[in-house]
Amino acid sequence: MLDVTKLTQAEIRRLGIEALTKALGPAGMARFMQQFEIGSGDYTRDRDKILGNPTIDEIFARIEERRKQQEKGEK
Image (tube, rainbow, N blue to C red; front, side):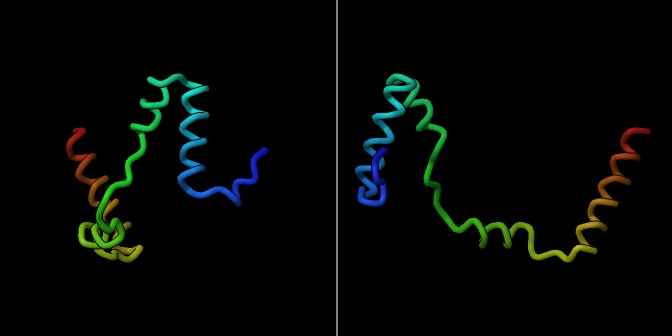
């Protein structure tokens, strides 16, 4: 087993891609890698802008309101 503490990030990445290619083949490795993307932005800031910072009571009130709306829609 390799001592990964002595490897650089680039070496770990290279070995990981080699292992995936060996296990899955080139196409499988590519499909696996497509599942991951670095993304951008600040998730926490964006989430707070969208959701705010509701209290537990506010969350429960929203749930109850949604339930009432769903019940009306089912009748």
